[in-house]
Every structure is written in C-alpha cells, then in structure tokens.
Length: 417
Image (cartoon, rainbow, N blue to C red; front, top):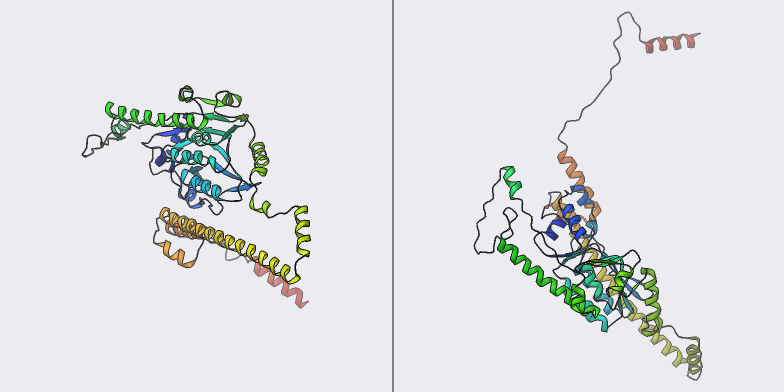
C-alpha cells in the first residue's frame, strides 16, 4: 500500500469506522498509481458556498469516504472531511435564515480521528435547530455515527445504515521483501516503537495492543449511538456491525422511517415554516398589516412619514450591504486560498516548485498554470530530433523531356497561332 496515495495515507496503520466491503475497495484503490496528468487536471473543492439551501433548509452533503482534514484533491478522489463538514454545519447553525438542517448522507464511513467530536457537535446543536438525516443511500459506520446524532434519521427504500464497528489492518510484506532480495533493518528506541512495521511480522504483543484500542473505540462508538438514538447499549452492540436496509433499519431502531430525500426535505420545510420564520419571511407583511400601517401613516405629518420611511429603508439597505460585503470578502479569500493551493500542488507534482512565485506574480489561474506546466513538461521530455520526410520526383532520362516543359511549349504554340 502506497502511503503517499490519498487513500493509502488515509487508511494505513489506523483504526477505521468503515464498512467492510468499502474497506477492501479503498485498500485496492490505494495500490493503484496516479498519473501526473490526472493530478494536474484535478480541481480543488469549491468552498465558496458552504452549503446549499432550499425552503430555508440547509442541505449538507456527507458523501464519500471521510477523513479528519480536508485536502486539495478530495473532490477528485471522492473524499469528504470532518473539518469541512464542521465548518458547513456551524455556518448553518449560526445562519438566521436557516430554519432546519438536513444531512444528505451517502458514505461508507471513514476515519475514527475527529469523528466523535463532530457527532457530539451535531447532537448538542439539536437544542438550537431541528436536524434531520437521510441515508441516501448509504450511511455506514462513521457516516451512521453522524446520522445518529440527528434528531430524526430516515433511510431510502434501497438505502442502508449500520456497520457500527471499528476495523484496522496491518500489511506484512516481509515475504514479498524476501522474494525481492531486500532486507530492512530498523533501528529504534522504545519497546513499542516498531510494533507495526510492514516489513516485519506483527508480534503478538502489537496485535494485543491494536485489539485493545479497537475495543476502546468500539465502546465509544456504541455508547455514542445509544445516546443519540435513545437505545440500550446492549441493543446497539447486538447489531454486531451488521447492515440494515429499508424497513429493517426502522425495526432495529436505527432509523425513524423509510423516505426519499426530497420527501424528507419537503416535510421538514413544512414543519419548520411555522415554528421558525426566516428573515425574508419576517420582512413580508400581510395585507392586513399593510392596511393597518397605511391608515396609521395617514394621521402623521407628510414630512414625518417620508423621513421615517426613508430611514427604515436606509437602515435595511445598510445591513444588507454589510452582510453582502462580508460574505463577498470571505468568498474571495477562500477562492484565492484554494487557487494558490491548487497551483502549488500542480507545481510540486510537475517537479517545478520554483514556478509557483512566477505564476502568482503573473496572475495565472490554476487552469492556466496547469497548461503552462504541461507545455514545459512536454518540452522537457521532447528529446527526440524531428524526422522530416520529403518525396523527390523520379529522375528523368536525358532523352526524356519534362512534362512541365512540354506543357509550356504547347501553350506557347497556341498563343503564337
């Protein structure tokens, strides 16, 4: 397994809350090579808008394998991160226009590190705003830990939840090293320092330590789900990390109903529209309110009415302008940071890190920088001399006259006649 590969770095030597088949699939992906062209053409995630919103409901996508921190190529490899999810979630909680939060989950799970902190954050925010989750279609392992933290959990007819367990693997490539004629000698201090070296067989002591940590994390997982769902912990452990689909998920107490994502969105919007009005609804007056205020305004002096109306409009306009300006500045900073990160990564991959400063000074976009790097790489690799092919006319015998000359003489005779 190549630990420099995004998936290899995510999975190597660490416990994972990941569904078993997905665990094997990601292990296979981590062994696949990645071409320079693939990485150069990969686009960084767009964090300009933190979440989608419909009918005052914030929609937060929990998609792909999950890691603790975000990387510039997460979107290319289909990786989500707790770091970005937390930023999106807190933004939705603090947004006065948001009346509810809906988690759109389609993930096999992911890294343990950072998982339970985010699950606790979602669970605590129940007191602030309604939070629902939909397994659309998969919410397994770490993804289910996040889903269970919501007030309500729904699953589609073909969707599944569960896989409440922890898994880890150790790669022993000592036999492979021996076939290659390679022997690794590791010098270390501290008895446990070299426990999980892939070039040596896993010792019984190291295996016991890893199992102990897996058990600790498993207990943390089952207790978290039991608290979130209001279930006895024994019932959660009784699932034995199994997968539950459709109505079976409801019967197991891991979901509240079978529902499509769009239906859940509509139901949540309808339920929250009366409970918490968004800012734009508070600004809209009913016809009766408009009539009452119009009658009251008639009793005031004309100048007073104009002054008060103008002041109200000015205050509202200033508030909106300030909000828009702050959002625009934030978006611009995020976009610039993402652009520079993409250019820097492309320069590193191309083996030309010294080009970063020049590209930034020239004001090139990430795509333009990648094009320049591709041209430079092509020019660098083009070491073969050009081959020119030229077809010469067949040589005429001394007695044979050229057809061109014949045609010229014939045209001359015609013009003289």
